[in-house]
Length: 520
Ligand SMILES: C[S@@+](CC[C@H](N)C(=O)[O-])C[C@H]1O[C@@H](n2cnc3c(N)ncnc32)[C@H](O)[C@@H]1O
Image (cartoon, rainbow, N blue to C red):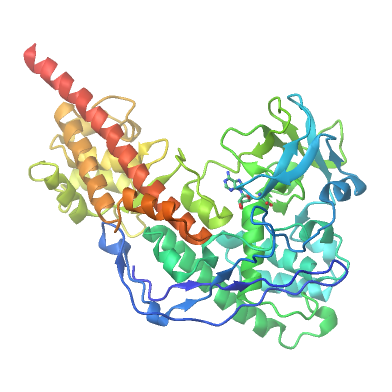
């Protein structure tokens, strides 16, 4: 996969906006270019990434410096009181819930007094969440049908952009019902579409660089489509009140949604519709949250669409947290603009490739591996694992709760044995897991684990820098985007090292069993 150009967006967010005026959208500025550079990121040819910055369109990210360094600047300097607005609109906010600085995470919700487990913290009535309108609600309105037309250009995977169009529409509208909410949104986001090109390269990890480039390219193309679609639209039918929407404002809206919207399940939520939940979205993330969203319409209070309750006792001055999901750092950075240290769900992606796996096996001292030329019965196993054929999914992962993706583990075990008969004895699920120790025998398991360790070494060596170098760069003090890129790649390398540790332990256990067996 060669990515010819590396696109990122420059977001100039400059104006402190007066509440009484309709806010202007941020302006996208000049396109820059720099010298060509190439980086090889992954072990396989397909993950070889070429960043040719001579065709690069880099737009730099400017953070305003006139606000307090600790706070995340909001869309307007002194936005309305969000808690008061929610209460005024019929929502419930626990009397001990406050919005406060939650450094370094931006703003957050804090308890001004102890809150007992099970207490209702926030409840929002149906009209407060912001969602993409369903036809019945805005039907007949041309600005609505123009918005729907634009949303057709948005691929399903970028659902945040669809809701982002609605957010931009409300941001442009004088007297929007949601203005109290929108004016409290961050002015800028730390997601990598806004990184300078150098910091996209600094991620050192091709799968994420690919996703960032894809999003940037989409935004630049979408900007053109929006322009064309709205060229001849009359002011009264214009979905953004005649305001020009460019890649920067689209990027702002997409990031606002991806970092704050919730996809709620259950019949009350029209099949997994994403929505922005004012105030609830002030909760920061934790894998051990002290609050949770109650998704079903409670019969005790049928007017409330969504509630947050305390999942445990929340002490005075504690921050309220929600779990955004068991996500890898790729998704945390791409959608939310942060990296979780020691994230148990982080993993690295590799491509299943016979040549690479033969090389890893040989490096591990396995004689005559046949990943490149598997026997027919081995090909059958690979087909069942969806690792051969036109539609094969060749992406496999190391790390996360599984440590080694089941399909990869089963493939290695099957390709490192000559024993076609024993393979028939087990169902594929057994071969895909570590739950039964050494299903194809100690020698096969040792060869499998050693090959995996060699794969880890290859993957680690493809990062251009070592963790220690990254850490010393971090210590020097760098801008936010560089800091995030450094933290991200440190975590990726740590995932590989953790996997190697785990596999090495397993090899040791097997060796001691082997030596016991040979003694008896
Ligand atoms: C739903 S908002 C939470 C409110 C946000 N802190 C604010 O100032 O508006 C999600 C954003 O909060 C920040 N955040 C939340 N949890 C975090 C965490 N565990 N580590 C770092 N940043 C976090 C990130 O900037 C993320 O995009």
